[in-house]
Amino acid sequence: MRRPGIRTQLLKGTTPLLVLSVLRDGELYGYEIAQRIRERSGGAFAPSEGALYPALHALEAEGALTATWRESDKGPRRRYYRISQHGGSLLAEHERAWAEFSIGVRRALGETGRG
Amino acid sequence: VANILLIVALLALIGWAMRSRPKPVGSPPTLTDLPGEARGFLDRVDCSLALPLETRADIRTELAAHLADSIAAIEAEGLDEVAATREALARLGNPEELARQMRRAHQTTRRLLAGAAGGIFQAAVGAVEGYVAFGVVLFCFVVIGQASLRPAITFMTDHLPRIDQQGLATTSAFAAAVAVGAAFAAGRRSVQELAARSRHTARQVGLPWAAGGFTVLAWVILFVNTAEQSWLVVPLELLVPFAFAAGVLVRMDRPLIPRGRHFPPKVGYAIVLGLPVLVVASAAVGATSPSNPGGDAYSFNTSVLDRVAPATATTVASFEGMVWGQPLVQSSWTIDDTQTLAQYRDVRFEAWRGTLIPGEREDRMDYLPDYRYAGPFATSPAARDGSELLGSFDLSHVRATRWVIFLTGVGPDGVRYRLSGAMPPESVTTHFSGTVWDWLTASA
Image (cartoon, each protein chain N blue to C red):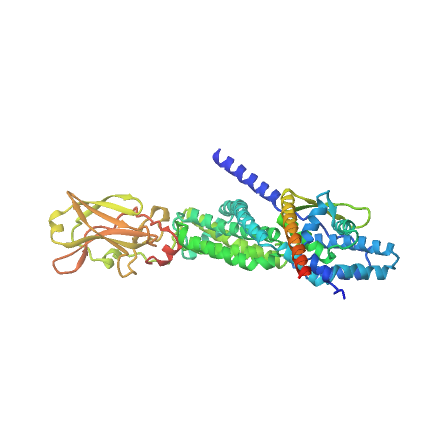
């Protein structure tokens, strides 16, 4: 039986990586970021919307993102985020860490399967 | 020219500092398009944020935009507005938890350190700003006071104990009074900067910031800063750390002077700010007053000197001159009667507190020894140098304001006699130069 929330648990900690990776292509606002991640994963997952904004603001506080307000014809103004130079370095660091982690997990799972 | 350049540089610094301060980038959005349930959710987030107003407004706007997009997208999938709103809100999760996460994202140690650094810088800018502004106001007041309030203030100084010393301490008093205003401006400006940069409310950071600033300033005022101290200057200097703390804590979240309300707040501020102004103006006017008896009522008595020490039949030495230096005051006396001098032992100069002869002008320094004191406040052995007697007094930490010196010696009968007249009719006022702590712990 599939445990509810297991995907959320797996996604925890990857939100900054996912956010930085979609912003590599250009600036987006919060809702667009969530949509873009969902599209890229083929609808398989998206970060919790409640966790997305704290992650965006934390990355901005860290200097990985810069934010700009733009007027919108669809209601309130949007806050667009753009990746900074520091954010680019941070993304590369996250990607390396994720690659090592996922390889390790695969190996561990393979060994468990053989045992 | 140098002063003008300095003022221009200071104004440029203030202008630059004001431009460099973080400005609010958002304002509360118009939320009338959002369903009531969504507005209620945003209100709950807002109530739990505990962030500066402009940051809260930014977050509210951003979440409102998100909800508007999210509700529209869900409605496009076929749900009605009520169901779409509930679904959009459910995706954002618990509003209090969201607020807590947002607060943690904003209030980082890095921002706190940056805020503290910015606060210190803005404190310096605020101090300059306050010094210039309050200095100009005080200067104008003193000038106006001298021109128009002279009779009233002269009356005050004639009937109250003198708090300045012939105007010698007035410059220090002026500087100290201006420093009170500067400290207030520094406190207020610095806490605003700290709160804005660290993303805290002024109320959250105000108390520790005020305590820290108070401690540092109190230490500097008590133990580091040296000035010409007096009963006027010391209280003003001691007010400086309190003024800083008041600048940080008083009406920290609101404009200092409420708009549209004139009484009683503005009257209260006028009194608080006006008091040091009045004190300094009073001292300044008193210092330049052409006729100022000063001190307590004093009945002139020609035998005052004899009350202090009985005089010998002849004058043994007469005053020649004085070299006024820091920390030593050296006086030289001409020996008039060597034979009589030889009959006395333990010959020394005694410095007594003086009192102004009634009716005489303060600036002429016509003092007599104040015989209400039991003894001299300083003594110096009379060192003989040929036909001269030399005395040397260290008065740098003596709080006497008026004083006189004369020569004494112990006669054959064992009684100490006065061997000279009171020196000089042109007696001088001591300058107490040191820290507040030196002054408070010095012999009275």
